[in-house]
Amino acid sequence: MTSRAILAALACILPATSAFADPPDFDRPGAGFATTVLPVGTVALEQGLPTYQRQRDEGYLDRTYTADSLVRIGVGGPLELQVAGSAWNRLEERGLGSRRHAVGHGDTSVGMKWAPGGAQNEGGFSWAAVGQVTFANGDNDFGNGAREVSLGSTLQWKPDDTHQETLYANVDRLKGRNTWTLAPTFGRQFGKNLLAYVETDAIHDAEDGNELQAGGGVAYDIGDHVQLDAYALHRIGRHGPSVIVGMGVSMFFGSRKG
Image (cartoon, rainbow, N blue to C red; front, side):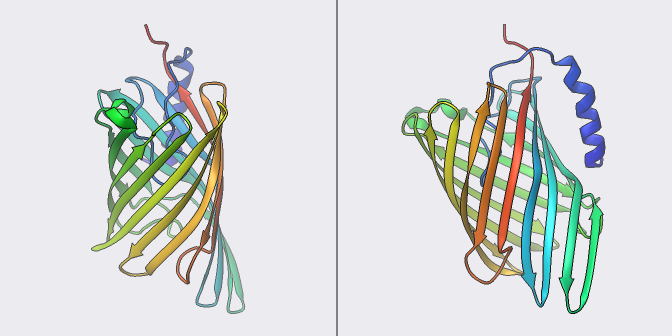
């Protein structure tokens, strides 16, 4: 299934969900994901607008724009189905006297989130895990070229209504090699609608070496069912993208409780 087909299927679902349920926590933005799942039978769309990435490598300068999409579906209990992809990507590459660009779609992934207990655990602690398979159905410039399996977990602490800290850990296995990510995030609520955070992403790739990114972002709620976000990360060290900047919108669709 391509990401275009995913979005088309979602468009068929949304008109039937005319009333709203209590709003959930969105997975965007920042490292990791929310430690809660959607109510059964409800849907959320989290869309990049897009993400910009800049990287230098062996005399080449790459600029990539990615409109990433995440569809979340509550399936009941502590479980949530997730389908992700990027229907539109653009690559601009310069170096060694040459220049080229490419446009296409990325790989599609299917995953399941498990959030036992959610934010109701004593002491403001909650956690969730996501297992995901990414299929190699993207265009050559924007896909992995092989199936990838990922397993990640987010731990969250909310000592009060203003502060929250999370720790995200993830491993991706692709072509017999593992990529490890560990990312702490520190957030603060400003008023009812605005959340700001800072984060550090430490990445170990068996092929490309160690990467370290640092930055932060903001998320702003519009009403109870729409969120806007913006974020930026900058490379610390020699490996990995030098700059990552993104914006996004998240929307929740469901039926009213009771």
